[in-house]
Image (cartoon, rainbow over all chains, first blue to last red; front, top):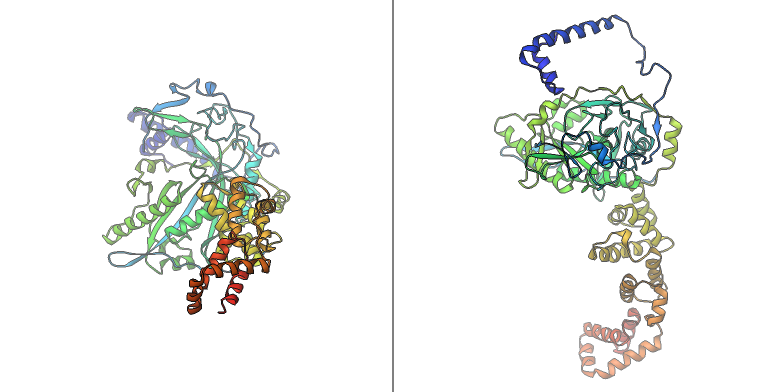
Length: 95
Length: 503
């Protein structure tokens, strides 16, 4: 499978990673190599094998419906580049 | 279970410039699951808190924080599935839906694309007595809600509140079985009613706890039937999705407008483009959300932080055994047990609290009479004060007491209305009030005869007129009722007046 520079540009945009136009061909090549490497896995016959979801026989942990977290507006906002009146403030996003 | 039988409604037709058109509508309803804590964190779900105070580090997408699923959210979603007669999948899994938006700090929403918790079910949508649309449910999955962005507090900035981030939602996806704007609104009404009966969602649309995305397409008459026979969407038109509506009125208006927009495009020789649109209630039109189009590449994949969700059949059976009586069954029972019309039964079962109130009043009494009093007198009076049934100053026991006094002949229907007003405004035991205020109906024939005779003697001119024209006898009845303060038994007065006047 080959990733073209166009696809690389799209993937970068979806991930909100800024990539210079000149770097796209090299990046596309690297992504193609990774996919080709992984494609070797397709050679294994997994017909009838259940997908493995955990290396140990574990089940999903559940929690009870109890409020035991939150109430820390200050801590939540402490890393924000900009916060006003208890809100995160971000450059305007309008539909 | 008792069932009433229904005929399907006619699909709505819209006349285009040349031909008639029909609508095909499918809905995705997002219902906030009624819980104390969020889906994957212990932060509160309470509405209206200080911004960013109901937020745990998991909700804020802090590095290294891991989600742990809230058991009760799953239980509530299973209960909802059972209430919609749906298949419950004992094995389901969570997936990541990736997109960027300031109110989604994780950069993805945890949802269930590939293996939803709940499979196919159905909702019977009542349109009129005897007429209902059966809408098939395709699936219900559990997912996180996003935060809230506020755009009007600052000219250059958007403000973000993460209190809603991570609150559990059920997305209830219907098949394209809805055939008009009214049906779409009625579908949401019915779904909301069932969720409220189940206690799995409070149904508060104003707070955004229940909101709907609507998929609308138009087709020529006959095409929809071909689609139902074959399952081939090729028989239907291209659909547009109208996002995020939280009022029944807007849902109807948006569908109506969107259908006409699509018809105009097709009749002009154009083609409808599949896209996401927003309804603008001020302008009464839908507009394209082009900015969302690219984000449609959600790159779903299984969430590696969460193992598959495995539940036991026994646990599901336990939830099933605890289901309350649902609206359809309750309505059918009210019709059959109390002899109510389907319309009255619908009115009484619309809200679960009202249904319980009615049952308490009707227990051991005349069901129809109880229904009339609850619907006309109680509901009417509450509406005047802008109160709902839970705020009724008259308890079921008090209203029942009034009905007992009518049934025993102690008070007339007319006096009962006055008594109701007294109980409504000042409270108290109806029987005691009747005794204290001397409101008892006079059934003693001698007393009524005396009152009739007095009126006849005082009005010789009226007697002559009435004897010439028997219709005027009503005047005497009225005078006697007035003289007795409305307490005389009207039937007895009528009989005695007729006899005394020799009519």
